[in-house]
Length: 429
Image (tube, rainbow, N blue to C red; front, side, top):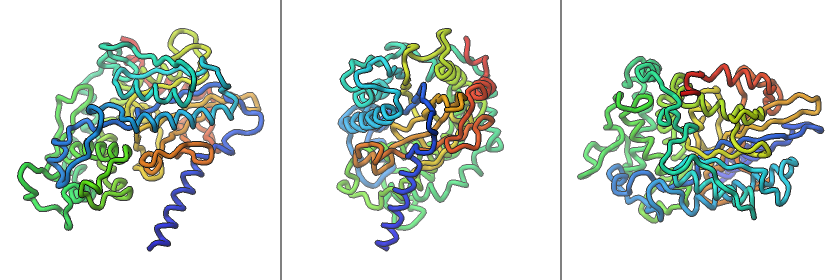
């Protein structure tokens, strides 16, 4: 058993390093010109209180040292490590030089965790620079992240809800039943049951995930609300992920069976809920058309005011949320799987990276990838470098990418692909 475990660890490490190594993605004479990094914020405190989370568990939950939803000190440290990795990478590619404080432009949503993440990233990516993190300003709504709330996009809410419901035949019963194994696994972990399913009577004031009733909620705002085991589990598993990545001591609180393999299994519920609610095509057009058009203008170098950052910015870092990345990926039909995570999962600090290269043959191309710190790297706060890189998954952009190592997407085709995906009704008020 020890040999098998060691072999498994070796294979995971080999896969991670293999994915993360950019060797072969570029040829001699290729030149990197521009980078856009769209990243999720770093490790934050749980959004729910420990007392609320403990209604679904037999053991106490860890306590964070910061308010709900705020970036933790460990989260800031992890973001700085990621920033340092980006700096090493892009210095080696000739895009950054020492002391060039105008090379990187930071834009963040207005929440504490996004602004603090951008600041922490800048400490690693722009050391010694008085990096200004840009936002729309306190009390305002940023259309990059909330186009409906900002008044830029005005969707047909009935159509949005129909689009989501249509993916599951108008009802959630069969869709939810398909996740029963993951639900029972999560309940067994939370309630520390030896047999599945956990007993109905789990204790006073306790509730099982499996007992949540699947239902649609038409008061879900921009799309459609989802109730049931998946929605319940989504919040709980995100809280597990954040506490695990923050280095919290579950074993010291009496938890048994909480390890990376179990986390991987229960993450499936979060991904199922996210996919249905946030990766439905009409929803993605509403939520990401404006963002996609601004990112395109940035990569093209448009001078009409649509680009993010200054004309001299060689790297543009945009810090948002997991939903920000999920909906843009849905719009462009981007898929990935990082070691230790579910397909398409966006862990803290995970990023969609778009690079504009000028190849040796003169062709300008976009090379895209998803990059994220692995669960061990998060929990152990592993310094990142070219020898200990994060996990990297090159992205194939449908209707654009070619059969090259880095899935080169010719710039003019990328332009057409993005413009074809967006709905201009959701770009201008």
